[in-house]
Image (cartoon, rainbow, N blue to C red; front, side, top):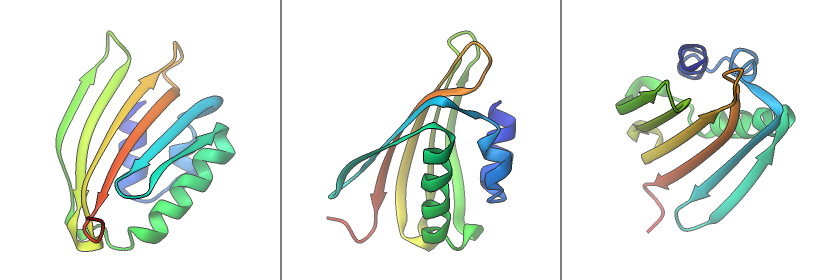
Length: 115
């Protein structure tokens, strides 16, 4: 599941990414200086990624220096950045269900222009 998700994310392939989400998925994004927003189900995940990829127009500076995969716990923690798009830091915590679909995803975003 993680290989599919990261492969889809790095190529901005939303249909591929959505294969990892179900109607039970809940994604919560905490944006520093703005608060939180919750997306539910496949449609919510699609809305979230569509908006995010509009903001992250250039992946040439995309880096993911921290990626911890815990297969036993069915969880992934990743920290990444895309400085060229003004994203100084992002951290995602994924919790997968028994079918290795995203059950919960919590995201923290810190944009360069937010103090």
